[in-house]
Image (cartoon, rainbow, N blue to C red; front, side):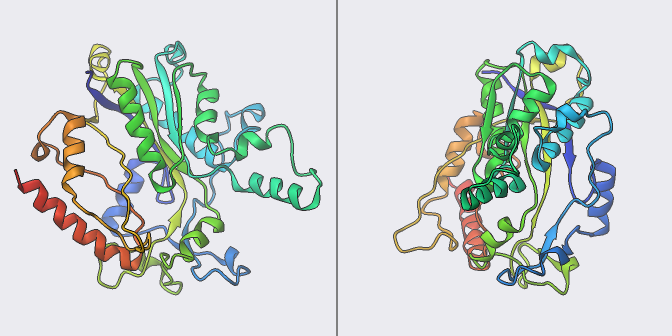
Length: 330
């Protein structure tokens, strides 16, 4: 099976859209969380915190026709893809349209203003807020579709929509497409746009931070005073490439993707989904080892994701300790 490398990286975030800007914020210990005065009218929402991308505007070279099918989430995904392609040396390269490049991009939901227009139609029977592009902006696969359309890609399209793991699943499936020889290149990643509906989804689960008076001090994972998560928006896209192809064209290689694995994990009966559970974490190690064809001690980094409520954090820490112990066992 082929080896997969990362040759291009692009991102749009509340901390910035270039690595020097983001790195400066990280080194300074600054976050991008702010109090959302726009949400003060939402009386049932406890958190008022989010990390929005203030001042984002589509690039001037994007045409009106291109923008018609793009809501905010798709604009993030397309712009991050544009930056990733430039970083990989594929900006304006017609070869990406010949079928060798596909896209695997995730978002948990489409553009929420368009969803609201459909809801208004169902409630009132009037469709004044809808047009021919409303569904394209609303559909959960809008980010993947718009990336493919914008760049004229004719390879595989793999939309992933699995809440907080949508983007990581996109990367994993893109990796599989290249390793199996079905694609040479893939644009992979995910995007989300901010909406209070996302905040209240976690609010109802008692999973959001409610430090409304100190946004600069939250979220604080693994801290004993942590009180929850904060939602944000943005996009991150990568150019994944067959390693031999990258070496042949003299591409700069940022990293190698040695494997990815996505598993359902069932919780015991009568245990709420926010509490966390890990029956035997060694199956995670075994799965990633099988996919990567390497011993687990040679894999320096593993990404896992589960809802981290205040109670669930304790279970997460216990699970991670079990993973470390499982790593050391034969």
